[in-house]
View (cartoon, rainbow, N blue to C red):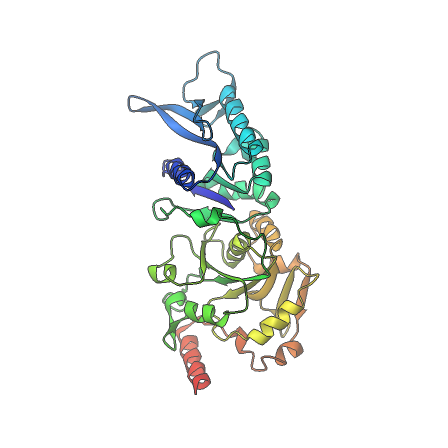
Length: 381
C-alpha cells in the first residue's frame, strides 16, 4: 500500500503523518523514513527540521533566512539545506536496508517531481518497501502521481483532507495476497445534476441504488470498491458492509478519474467498472465478459456501435494510461478505450444473455427512476 496524505499548506498533513507513525509503531510495525516538523523562533516559522523515524535523530532541513555560508537549493520561500537532504536520504536508504515495513516520505515536493532532492531515494522506497506513507501538497498531487505512480506495483490510497478523514487506516498495512481474480469498482461520485438528488441514496424497492449495485455484484468479484467524490461520502455509505470506500484521487475530473482511482486502489489484475445508476446488472453477461478478458486491456459491450465504458472490464494497468490522458487534459473515457487493446462485446453476443438490454439502463432523470421502479416491481412479481 502506498498511502498519500495531501491537503493545502498548513492543513495538518505532517501532523497526521506523525499520528500514523506513532500508531503503527504501537501496533508493532517496523517503521522508518523521515518526517518534517516546523521550527519557530518565538511565533515566527524559521524553517523545518527532519527527523529519522527509525532512530529519532534530527537535523535542520530548510530555512527561511539561511546564513551566508548556506549550501543547498532554493524552493519558494525556503532554502533546502544540502546537509538536511543528505541526512534524509540516508534515513530512507537505511529504512530500506533494514527491511522496514512502512517507510515515511514527508514533504515530497517540487524538487522530487523534477527528479532532484530525494527523488531517487523515494523512488527506491516505492519499489522496495511493502508500504509507504507520503506527504504531498495538494497542488502537486497530479504531478506527483504522474512522476511516481506508473512505477508503483502496489495500491494507492489518498487522504485528501486530514480534517474529515482522521482515521488511522491500519488495515491497509497488514499482510495480504498480492492479487485476487477480479474486483468490482462501483462509480458513485457523479453530481446527479439531472436527477435533482443524490443518485447514491435514491431508492428502488427499499434499497438505495448503491445498495442494489452491491447486491447485484455479490459473488462475482473478490472485492467491491466504491469510488465516491472527494469529501462527499455520507454516513450511510460508510456503514455499508463488505465494501472499501475510495475517494477520487483527482477530484472533479469526471468518470475517467473515477476509473483511475478505482484501478489504483484495486488489488486485482482485472476490474469490473459499473456506474451505480445501472440497477439491472446481468451476472451471466458479466461472466461472459470476464471469459473474454485474456489478452485484452478492456472488455466493453457495444450497442449500435456505441460502447458502454461504465459497464466494462479493465486491466489494472489501464490506470496508468488513464492518468496519462488526464495529465494531457483529456477526460473522455472514449479516449481511454482508443489507447487500450479492447475486446468489444457486440450486440448479438449481448442478446444471448440480456435481449432487452436492461443491463445498460441507467438513471439520469426523475422519469428514469420512475421507469426503473416500474421494471423492478414487474421483476418482483
